[in-house]
Every structure is written in C-alpha cells, then in structure tokens.
Image 1: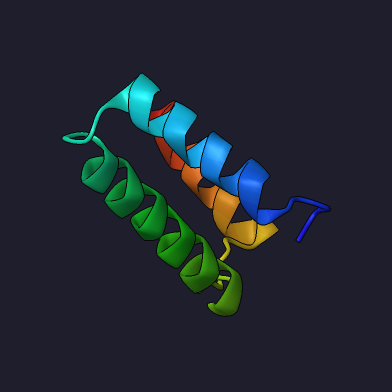
Image 2 (image 1 turned 180 degrees about the vertical axis):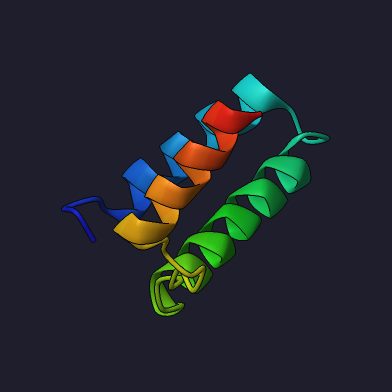
Length: 70
C-alpha cells in the first residue's frame, strides 16, 4: 500500500492522534466517510436532464412586441 510498512502507518496514526486528539477523530472519520459516500453517489447518478421547454424564435419576437406595447 503505497510502499508504507506497518511501522510507518503506526507512526502516522500516532501523529494524527496527537494533532487532532481522541475526541475529534470520530468526527473527522465520519465527515470523511460522508464525503466519500456523497462523491460515489454523485458519480453513479446520471446527469440531470433539463426538460424545460425552449422558446421558439417566433414566441420570443411576440413577447418582445408585447413588452414594447406595455
């Protein structure tokens, strides 16, 4: 795993524990888990399709004429 042995992983975990403290680690892990879950969900969902009807050129001209009259 990225060329890291067991000793290096333990050292990294101890440093993280010292930096963030034992109380904040569950919060950080939960936040990371939620972020990964939402990222995977976003990647698996199909892109949203815009289904609003587009105005034709004739409709646009008619609306412009009505606005000028008002």
